[in-house]
Amino acid sequence: DTAVSQTPKYLVTQMGNDKSIKCEQNLGHDTMYWYKQDSKKFLKIMFSYNNKELIINETVPNRFSPKSPDKAHLNLHINSLELGDSAVYFCASSQAGLAGGGGTYNEQFFGPGTRLTVL
Amino acid sequence: AQSVAQPEDQVNVAEGNPLTVKCTYSVSGNPYLFWYVQYPNRGLQFLLKYITGDNLVKGSYGFEAEFNKSQTSFHLKKPSALVSDSALYFCAVRDSWGKLQFGAGTQVVVTP
Image (tube, rainbow over all chains, first blue to last red; front, side, top):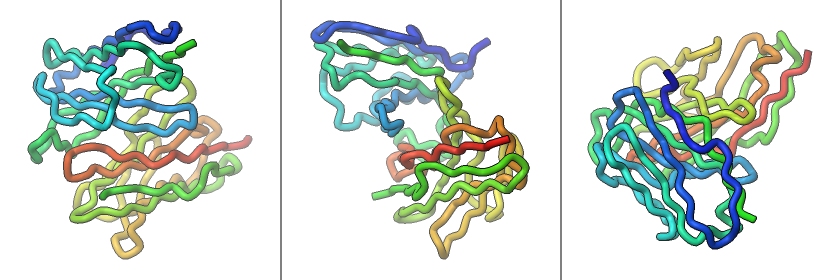
């Protein structure tokens, strides 16, 4: 009955590999996000999807490609992994509020995170 | 551009004492402000938010925050801290695109 789940929890891989992180929410929310938390705990949004449509795409290298097969899932695929990609990646979801463009006044629910280590 | 600042990297408080975690913001337009808490090796948990209305907002786990427009602040408070409140606290502001801009976080350490 986990609200926002991510798999895997830990991911250790070599430079140059391609990997995916999966996220699922069972809250019935229509908006999902990917955040990156670096080693200094700084948290920054990467992407946001509303009803399977990409609405926020920060200045993230195009090696990162999100995919939303349906409203309940938002996966993150990373090509050609680099050392600097090592971080904790969090998925989150929320129900869009009154504002358009993916704006939401509602709180976001976060998954437990995926710790990615690139060697 | 919207931003928040958390001026303290760490706040130390004895159990039973009041806890305050500071946050100041910079926005164009109405501010929409949030507080989240992150326990070790966990995701962020929502504590409370200010959208409109009363300046004093009550949230989860006995926390509250006071919105002060003149001082552009949204400080998080708890009257009596518990050891279990030790965690990383994030202030965030929603920008005009709907994104949450997080502060750098404040580590709270509550000692018995």
